[in-house]
Length: 78
Image 1 (cartoon, rainbow, N blue to C red):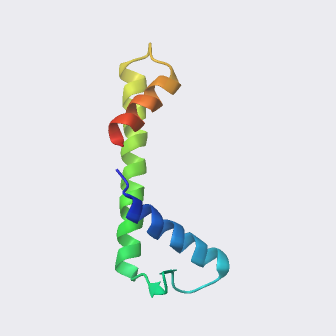
Image 2 (tube, rainbow, N blue to C red; image 1 turned 60 degrees about the vertical axis):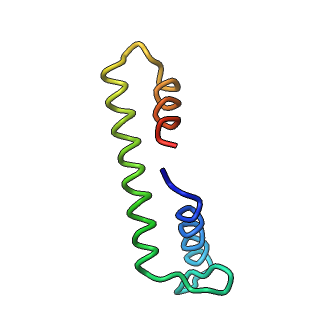
């Protein structure tokens, strides 16, 4: 899953972009570009994995509702 640190890095990058800052900072420390790339890669892969799992379960278990499938996938992922 996505850890708190990854989520905080992504949030800091988004806030820096909204504010028009070139670099993202947390507690007056600049976040390196490699850390930002890693955080985005983890988030993108996580989203892809969850999406594929929801799709597969919807196909393999048509008797389950969409809410049930999403609940099961998120529970298993987290």
